[in-house]
Structure formats: structure tokens, C-alpha cells
Image (cartoon, rainbow, N blue to C red):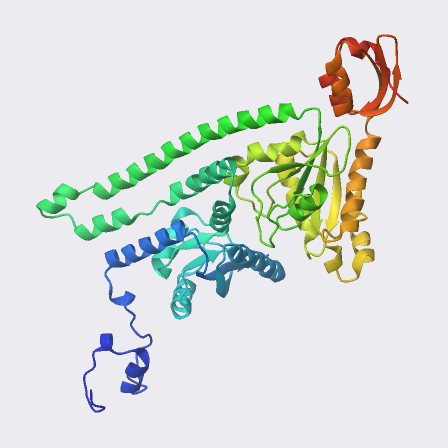
Amino acid sequence: MSNDSKHFDKNQLDKNEFDKSLSEKEKPDKFPTEKDQLSEVERGILLEKARLNLETRTIGGMRVYLMSVELAEDDPSTIQEDLQELGALVRSLGDDCVGVAVQKRSKITSHSLIGTGKAEEIKQSCGELKVDYVVCDKDLSPSQVRNLEKIIELPILDRTGVILQIFRKNAKTREAKTQVDIAHFEYILPRLSNSWVAFERQRGSSGSAAGRLRGAGETQIEMDRRRIRDKIASLKKDLERIKTERNTQRKGRAGELNVVLVGYTNAGKTTIMNGLTDSHLSANNNLFETLDSAVRALKGHMNPKVLVTDTVGFIQNLPHALVASFRSTLEETSHADLLLHVVDASHPRFQEQIRVTEEVLESVGAGKVPKMYIFNKVDAVAGGLRVVKLLARNYPNNICISAESKEDIKRLRDAVVDYFTKNMEERTLEFSYADNEKFRLVYLHTRVLSMIPTDDGAVFKVRAPTEVFQRYFSGENDERSTEGD
């Protein structure tokens, strides 16, 4: 094509060639993209494909744009910290945050959360940055998601949607997968795509073909919703069966002491779990790395045996659907003999994280379970251990450690053992030689202080929790037992 040609096929020229071919006065405000020339139905198909790709992908590597809203009463620093946490959530999926936008507003509207003009700006930025999907730090209603997707023409996730994706990625056991699937389906049910209605609008209302197809879109959506509701019901039945199995396993451990690790996500619970129990669980520096409850014995010989349980981490605004679905798992905390509340002492908002964790514990009936505060990551705190101890002084029964230090882990283990030792009862039990099973249970579940042989058996002085005596030595032996000082 010669330089003096008057006519140009814009579809066959890239942006630079087109810009060079026009004077500054003739240049358009926005270079037309391939998507701009598509019909509404074609755009809907592209958006649906993008949603499906996001929903079914198994690896990271997507490009993400973050957005939020700042109201007059909001603290700008809090908004920035929330966005940083949102970025950490996105990176836990293996994706990259390539842009961010915050709009100051006097109030949040029910239509699209942000203004139409701002949404158009985000759309343009996303096109230039080759973004795959957009994440909003606020929870969005189904209508807000649809309206934003219509403008931005990319899949829109809110904070809950991102957390659900992380949970789906990290769930390994049958119980965790079932819990996550329930929460996921309950989340997408009201957000089910309206693509079939878009096709219906394009067909029009006249002609025999249109008459035969009228209403097909709505019927398809209802079919999809019914399938999802049936799936949720089936999964809940599965979860009830799993819960029954969990209760049976718990009863089998009734004579053993149970320590449960709780805390904000990425506080270091799994690293501490590995140190206390000589386990090798995955403890990568990602949010919600651990979803599956793991139970291991505290290392070192101790009677009765002490079991340590790792649990899912908490986070601010933890989705209600996840709390409900993971209730059977979280209820492990209400059956604990001791909670180790792990706190990331290096986090600038650790006090807020403590509050969030304790609110969740309260909601699952574990608010009154004895707890010990474990201020972790003291090696990352400016000012060191002295500063941490000053920060921790408002929290009773605390210990400051670095989970990477073997000496600190040993100190924590000794603190746990001391706690149980101080809270054991001392009793005297007498059995005949004919009752061999009682001899075995005494040595298995109690700390034997002394054993005095008799003509037909032995008298034991032991220490153990009340629950152990009630489970294994109730009835006739209780009458012969005496309380220690």
C-alpha cells in the first residue's frame, strides 16, 4: 500500500500503522479492537468461554486486575492493606496482579458498586494489560457481577470467589473436597450465567423458528439450577456420613489429650505442627495452604498421649458459606483440651487478626476452650523479642517463638506438657491380676507415679485427666479411687 493512499482497511492494519496514516485531527479517541466489532451474542460467547476457562483451569499464570471502593468513612491505609491481602490471595492461585484501581465514592450503589465511567476505564486498562479476569475486594451481589461483566467484558470475581478458588485448589481429602464443593455450588447458584437469555433476546419474537424456540433460554437456566441444587443436596448427605465417621474417630480418641492449632491464615500453624510432631506436612508461604485437618502425636513419650490437630486458617470476612460447610471440621476446636492460637507477630494488624480468629471460634462453640497464645515469627519483628513481649502482654498465657527455631519449638512443647501436667488429677487405683486389660490401660493412658504389688494384684498411684478416669476406670474402681492433693 502506497503512502499517499486515501483509503485504509482498519481491520488489516495494526494500531501503529493506522496512527501513522492519519493526521492528529483525524485520529479516533480509541482504536477499534476485534472485540468491538462483535455482536452482543458473540461477546457473550467470549465472556462465557473466559468464565469457563477460569472455572476449570488447573494451573495459575493468569493476569489479574484488582479494584476496590473507598468511602468517606474508610481509612485509606486499611483499603491498601486489604488490597495487599487480596493480592496475596491471588498469588496463592499462582496468578499475577498487573493493575489496581480504587474509586472514591460517597456511597456504594446496588447497580455495579463502581460508577459506569470508572468501569469503562478499567475495561480499557484491562485491554491494554491483557488481563484475564478482574477481582473486587468487596463482596458483590449477582446483579453487580452481571452489570460489571457487561461493561468490562471479563469475568469478575469478588473476595469470596477468590477464596473459594484457593480452597478448591488446595483441598486434598474427601471431606475437604466435599466441603469446598458445597460452598462453591452455593456461591455460583445465584450467579449462574444468563447467556441463554442473551441468545433469546437476539432471536427476536417473530417468525416460526423464533416461536418454536421462545423460552428455551429460561428453561435451560432452570435446568442448570435444579442440577446444582440436587448436587448440593447429595454433597450434604455425603458430608453427614463423613461427619458421623469423624465423630466415631473422635470417640476412639476420647482418652487422649487433644491440642488444636488455630489462627489466621499463613500465621505458621503447619510449620509449628511439623515441629511439635515430627510431621512433614506442606507448609509453603501461601494463604490457605492447609485445608485438610491433620492429627499427629506430640513427639516424645507422654502418658496419656497428646494429639496435635492442624486446622484451616481464618481470614477477615471468611465467607459464611465456607464457615457453614467447614463447620464439622471447625467443631474439632470445641472438643479440644487446649487451643494453641498462633499469631503472626510480624503482621502490622495482628490484633485485628486475633479478633477475627476469636470471632470464628466463638461462632463454632469454641470460645471458652482454654487457649495459649503463640506469638510466632518474632525473628521478623523490628525490635526483636523485647518488642513482641511488650505487644503480647495484654494476652494471658502466651509464649513468643520463631517456628524455624528448634529451641523455641522445644520450649513450646514443654509449655504444652506443663499445662497438662498441672491440670491432671492424681488418683489411686487397685486391680487384680485377673484384670489384665486394666493393667494395659493404666500404662497406656495414665502417668504411673508408683505401683505397689498386693497378694492378688497391684495398687497404682497415677495422674491423668478426668476424662481418662471416666472413660477407662469408671464404676467399681471409682469407688476405690482417692483424689490426690
